[in-house]
Picture 1 (cartoon, protein in one colour):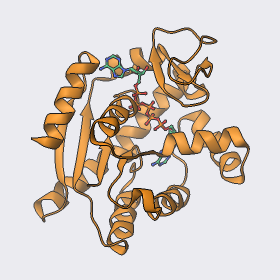
Picture 2 (spheres, rainbow, N blue to C red):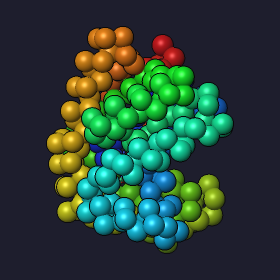
Picture 3 (cartoon, helix red, strand yellow):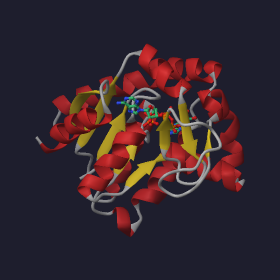
Length: 215
Ligand code: AP5
């Protein structure tokens, strides 16, 4: 099963993607995590992506298509992957469909996380993430330790107010049209598009996600 998680910044794609991956025993691919690791390691790809990410802009489609292609061809991802934030433009949606077809498979689900901007700003303004495993936390100070791996919690540069505003704008301008693209393709027999109310306690949202996928 291949599944795309689509939604604005702070909607909980990373949080719920990890829970669903553990529940289904499936791998999760988050392009944001891949890119942040590349920035941290100082690779060519990371250096090229850093300024886009810090401002809250999307990195170029070619970079994402390269990451997608490489990851999906790995044997451990052959049975299916939870694709968290991997598709944010129409060319990326087209590219993903093409790559999966070449691999003899297809996308099954698009899970759309819905939440109002006010809540997204509140969440991102209060988020810290582990500098090692990238687990996001709420209500935990920078400099404290990650419960999962012992790494140090930090604030993301793109969680500063101006970058948050830009990310929300970028979502409306470049990623919202992807939803329309998937709706049209659903009518032509493409992947099922399912909306999830992303507001509420983590466990409640998790139940909604499972229900959306498992029925
Ligand atoms: P990425 O890291 O994917 O950032 P994003 O899409 O902006 O998403 P976030 O990680 O901010 O939010 P999330 O939805 O995962 O929420 P989370 O679970 O953390 O991408 C970063 C950048 O990389 C992009 O801006 C771009 O530059 C680049 N990039 C990546 N992919 C790309 C692509 N395909 N094309 C081009 N560029 C790309 O939750 C947020 C907070 O809320 C956490 O603190 C969490 O604890 C809390 N929380 C979660 N759920 C709840 C709840 N139900 N109630 C209360 N709090 C909650």
